[in-house]
Length: 193
Length: 390
Image (cartoon, rainbow over all chains, first blue to last red; front, side, top):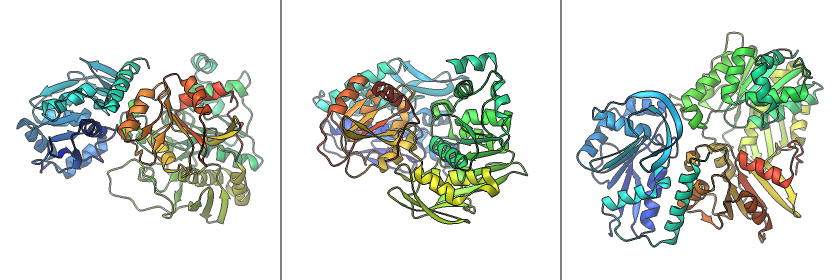
């Protein structure tokens, strides 16, 4: 693939509370190590036509108040984007916001702040939401986990890149294999602390 | 665990003890700089001939206060000192302030930190607001941090502000997402910083002195300390003596502390949150020797490591600590060259200290609190106060 892929992100300065934007860094580096070039671009929610993958991160209460007030259509624009079959990866409050636009209801219980294993997807959960951790809907991926989810779950990063048709060859890069070994160790350590 | 035990069998001991000081209780809190600022304030007040009860920087939560009281007090919980000057973690500061009502409190700053515990920065700010609203006499605040400008105080409590001039590197505090409030009148302002030489301006005049450690964060700590000390001492405050004291104070251990190990200087840099990691990376010297990066068990959720800009760091020679895997991943994904990853921390320390250093710079250890404690025990650094100024 010779195209320079566009990894789009909205409000990256505001939706990076737990290092969430690093998910795009993980995809970009893994693509690069497999010979695929990409660029991370901040985009407006009203202009998503040129985006190959859109990312939505996690923000503070104040950040979401700001976005809701100043960009009232942003979440409905992003919901329309993913409902039209275009790929989105959304984490934590970003995932809740977009899914909420589709009428999805979330039940809340005791607040959980811990590492969890959701059918093999391992990451940090810091939320009272009980009935959702990870789902693939159409061509999009949603998780309640926050932070650099794809660093700890390189198989998911690779699944996204493969399903979107960006990489097909087996991994040969030594750095990539080293990163995968570190991710394995990180996933084990998560439950030792 | 004696602190934990006493906190269970005599839960009111802390409140009773803290209410007994003739010159009251001073609480120093906020996200970053608590240890250094507290140590500076304590040194200034002691230099004025007043006896001070304080806590070591490793004991800024409730169990630590109990341990400190047990170590220094009698059976009734009486501890020596005319005044208590304590650094407190944000949550414990709020709880203690509501029960004991400090005479003076200082909120140094608000950054996005410990979100696995506090969930959202707004909730941290709310806790700090409980400290200021419970303070009786004076509140000292960071005039450059918008989060501090609307901290509530009671009618009779005064507000004093410290800050950094525009000539100094700007520190990015937690965003408030509110229209910017005008900068208040600043009582103690850091005017210029050249390496460790700081020039401070106040109504009492302009003074220059050497900071114990390199970095704009220590300039902020110093002006905060001067403002707090003046509020404590009031008319007895001697500005010359205060600046002379700051000129001579050693660094708090591991905040830019330099130790001679195997006949070579090694610098130790403690990082406890995104801002301290970012500022310390930004302040790394141009000439630097081998670097060890160790993230320990204290970092419960390593996600915050990914909020930091690592572009100042070109190479790390050794990565280790309980969270070595996350530490190594964040460096590699940020294109930092990682020469060695060692799961066994004590082996990593020995291998790192044995590395040849062909550069003109020092070996540097950047580590989290747990990695710091383990390294210090391993190398026999048992007394945290035993830090010399270089």
